Image (tube, rainbow, N blue to C red; front, top):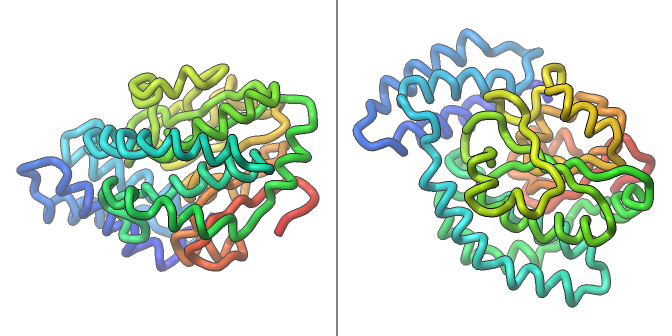
Length: 294
């Protein structure tokens, strides 16, 4: 997805937010340096995630921190973990377990800190869970996912945020109960509050997967032209790729992976919502590269 004007304030709000995660930093210097990088990188034909990656690289360098979101990620995982028994009970009691598991997974995508379009503190999620679930899935291609799951091949599951990933475990367990091999994909290096290998091992997420792979680099989302060979091979043999969150959508929306891709996310901003053709502020399960859709 190409960068739009709306991306500018969103990205800089995120830079300001993370510049204050490390005590004693010079937030003005960090924002100024990040703005200079933004000015050198921006272009109408550039992918939003390409520009964002370089801006965050500058910000992290100024911060002198490899993982400024670490404490927020741990807290988010702890908060979300408390909802796992409730979420599992919802799925177990549902007549449509796939749709229920997708619903549980998608509401976690609100844990997207610092941009001003979601929440900034994990504790906010505790008061939102029931309302988010009650909204249901506003754009619902779960029937298409069901068709995909009837085909040969496993599922490649591309994670997004910590906290959110705890609720993803409910969907992953359901997929494996259907006999599907599930390969999880995390970020190659810490970036934003996204899941890394360290986070997956810390929470036990890796134990719910048949295999764990990474994107291979510091990048917001998936850099498809530079994806590791082992991951590309897994995707080629999959019946479905599930890509969580907006960053994964922004990085993959213009790419043909050769297999159906299910984007499971909350439509939190205008550019992504318009690209998907859905209203802002709804829960979305949208499948590309497959006949059907909402």
